[in-house]
Length: 171
Image (cartoon, rainbow, N blue to C red; front, side, top):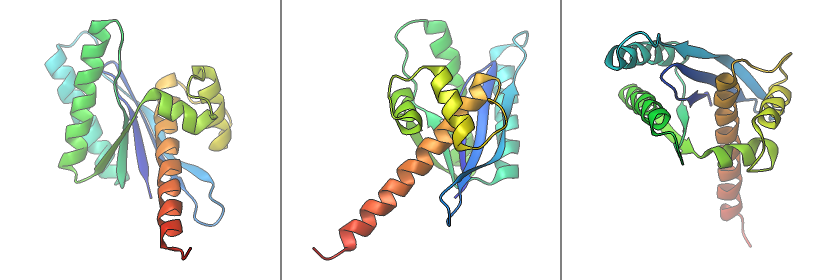
């Protein structure tokens, strides 16, 4: 299963496509990077640019699932708006490609990747680097966050498969 994690943002939208090997259960990076839009452009133009880039990414990678961070903001309404707009574009693009979508909160991702739902960003980045056997921490942080989303979903999918198998066993 190819999982495309998306850390939505209007200025920087991180992406990371990961899979898990059947035999060893190891995570593997398929692609990772960041899509950027110029702040000097009007928001509608930037959203169109983001959609075009995500459209191309989905065409190239053909993921089974797009995983996106469920947005939760306590302050900074300006940031919340642009992240929400970018998130909406990503969700729409995924659905238009017939791609399933899953959403996780930041705490769920941190718990899945580090074992601690309040882990600092540096700890998440270190675990992503370790789990994917990367030579260095993915930069910018949006890329590491997107990869962490993919890892989170692959772990959740494995857990669901185990539970389904256990339900089928005689007691």
